[in-house]
Length: 192
Image (cartoon, rainbow, N blue to C red; front, side):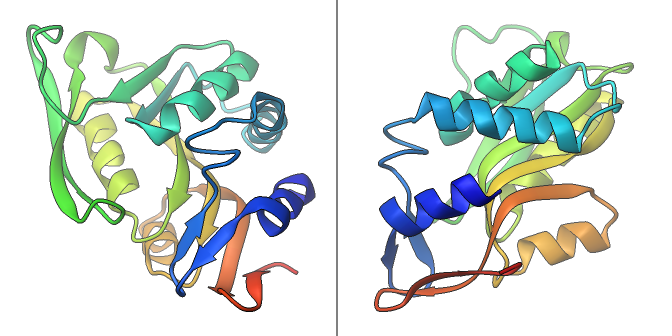
């Protein structure tokens, strides 16, 4: 998606060789018009898949997933990283190791919102090591729902997550695949 790549080149900030800060438009301050283009692109890529639920993980994926859901005309479920009083009853749980935060979370989805008959699209802002998608995929499996695939805004193709998940048979559509990056030369995309 060329519009996204241009935005990353212009406004993304590279820290070291593995951190890409896109918080000015993607995951802190959100450019909703860009999100609309992202939603249209995911709808195009997953056309005909009869998706009826979108699943993401808190917090950065929520805004993107909500806009994407408008194009699929379906609800968004987000896996919470902590059990709250608002989640009563039975839940699906999975463990996720966060690359960004350097810790392991239990992620939780109430059973009342996910189950057999659901066709689920996972949405997230980044794919690096793949732990978040693996955890979300496990929730879908535990619910007896059908996992259609994963829609990723930015994949760090130089990290193992995407290749490992694709090798397991998960369909992943990444809108921008970063091949390499450094503070001096910026970002190189895999398909440029």
